Image (tube, rainbow, N blue to C red):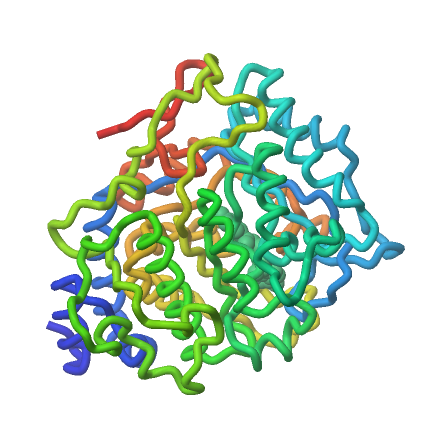
Length: 469
Ligand code: V47
């Protein structure tokens, strides 16, 4: 029984697996009864994933920190002649791929700034180089690369981007990268889907409509993608909910495209019931293509007793990726075209133009992640990215909505560790043993996954992905 009576109706909805509205989300953000919020998120998380908590062995690689943009929240970017600016050549990329394979990694997460001078050809070559090196070393490495704003940048430098028909240029770029071996898109660059916040904090970046277009086209091409929300800076809590609603609607569309119409649709001819949340947006517009019509069914994955659809069930797409190397160098690991994971990213002010802001507190981080689990009832995974949340907080998050920690990472350059005695450090590595220790201590069973959430089975240095259950 919640100590805040206003949470009772929300609790009933969560127990029944009904979709929450933005107004419900507002209440979850303002209630003093945070423990009920956290408990409900845990309930949903366990419904989806039981006591499993996922991690992967991965490497993050930034090909360049040179960026044409100057986003206020960003500490990563440099101008071409700035001290510390770097751009990696393909020899470096190959060396990183070899070292990742030697360490048993299954994933290379690759992002960079919007480089003003690198030619288009560099990017497919980069993807192919990683794939080739991994194969030459007798292994497979999933390339999860390029945020939506980078994809648009690539379409511009490849001279295929038309404002009148941006989807076709985006499709061309993604198809070329997929042919080179791209396996999925990371969730970065979404920030907060709000025009006011966009114009104040990251004006040069693409807006929500374009970000969502890139992900839609990726889904149409059969690539899975992730989504982030960067919170705790100049946005309002309500903005976070609108962001989640926009993602939720995009995911309804992606799942409907994959043929899910009957999972748990809230049957109603009433638009508000089919898309609860629309009524609660202040501006009355959600700013992207989903506004074109509300004919897409609501598809929740979190109803009790309803098995996850085949594509999103953990391990369902499994097949061997061991030394027999069933994939050609260019073909990527199987994906199917939807949002896999939401990753709430707490704003870390250090070194950015918004350094004067305090950044979110621990409880705010917990609450935001729990609300993401509750609102995003059609996105299977919630990641507590330990690099930004810290491993200690990530443990608490596993108990309140998160099911995934990301991976071993090693070098991370977007946000740096401020507490290193030598100054800010990009070396942020944990061992598999340490990840597992944190997961076990939080009361969960550690499960190594690959990028598309198949269980990884290891045999010495070889690994394969297999259905676990
Ligand atoms: O896009 C930039 C954010 C993102 C700051 O897809 C900041 O699996 C906090 O997207 N404080 C990059 N955040 C990270 C990212 C990510 C990380 C892990 C896994 C996945 C995935 C994606 O970091 C950027 C931006 O939104 N960011 N500066 C900052 N000062």
